[in-house]
Structures are given as C-alpha cells and as structure tokens.
Image 1 (cartoon, each protein chain N blue to C red):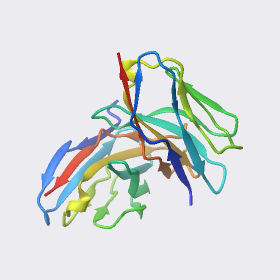
Image 2 (spheres, one colour; image 1 turned 30 degrees about the vertical axis):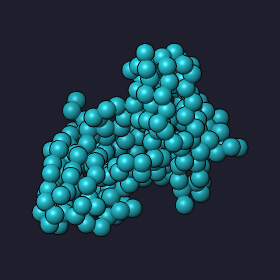
Image 3 (tube, rainbow over the protein chains, first blue to last red; image 1 turned 60 degrees about the vertical axis):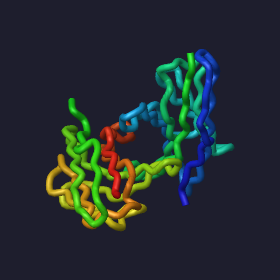
Image 4 (cartoon, chains in turn brown, red; image 1 turned 90 degrees about the vertical axis):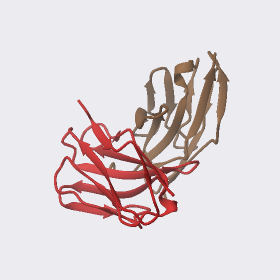
Length: 111
Length: 113
C-alpha cells in the first residue's frame, strides 16, 4: 500500500546548523508530496509541497525536491533557528482527499 | 478567519463514558477528516466526509462514529471510551481544486482512565 517513511528523531541541532530530514515514499501511482510542521500545542500546518517529479517546494527557508528515481522528498534548511523547533511530518496523497503521513521527526534547535 | 475549530482542547474520560469531539470549519470546505495521533505512530485516519450527509471509514474507525449534517460541522462520537482511545485527535478540512493540503484544527487531547 501507499506509505511514507521518514527518519526517526529526535534531532537536536545548534542554531545555524544545516538540517536534513529524510523522507521516502511508496505509492501505486504518482503522488503529491508534502511537508507539514507541528509546533508545540498546535495542529499541523502545511510547510511546502510538490506535485510532480523534479518539482522543488520551498517555504521559510526550507526546501524539498520530489525525486521520482529515489522515491524521496527530503527536507532541508541551510541554517536553522530556535523558532524552527517543531515536529515535521512528511505526507503523500494520490487522490487529494486522503493523505498518508509519516511518523514525524522532532527537531530541537538549541541556541 | 477562524479556520478549523476543535473543542474541547483537553478531556479526561472514565472507561465506558461517552463524549463528542466537536469540529467546525468556516472555509466552506467540502472535505473533512478526523485523525488520531499516537506517539511515534504518525496520524491515522478515523473517518472522513466528502460533503454534508456523506461519511466514510478511514483506517481506524472502530469505537467511533461521525455525522455530517452541515458543511461546517463534523463531530466525532466516542460511545464507550476505552484506554486504547487515549490519543490526540485532529480534525482537518480541505477543498479539491484549491492547492491541495489540509487545514488542521489545534487538536483535542483525550485521556481515558
């Protein structure tokens, strides 16, 4: 079935460090891919998305490229800030009305 | 805009009690969803609805019921609470044709003791 696998956390980085959170997917067709972010005590918010192969989603300094050949959608940021501390979820959808989420990766950025 | 509003934010139930988790959206979205989030398990879809009067089961529907009498409201009912239902519950909505992606509520943390 369709699924998403993302790297387990927690991840702890110093401010201004480089961030990579790995995400790979399995899908029967050609999914759209997403990264959601969940700040403490809040719901999930859409961070970025890509709807076809080789698309790059970007927002707030975060980027992810839809790699069909490696079935991956890794999240990157060149210089993390304390305010980026959150849980990050990779997700996919084939139909647009049902999403499959990864288990989440907790990121803590220390000053 | 309020977006998706969930109430209550926190609740403690005793085994066998019932309760309804409320979810309201003001974006005129057709699609609404209930997820539960367990530690280390990601989000699991409980029920979803593609419009008023239409609901369908997700991945983990047992022990829950839903109704969708209006576009705005999508309540989730727990009839006989069990410890296994201790979780954080998220309601979400979406509208096909717009940039795909959910709008999530802020969640309800439920503990069954």
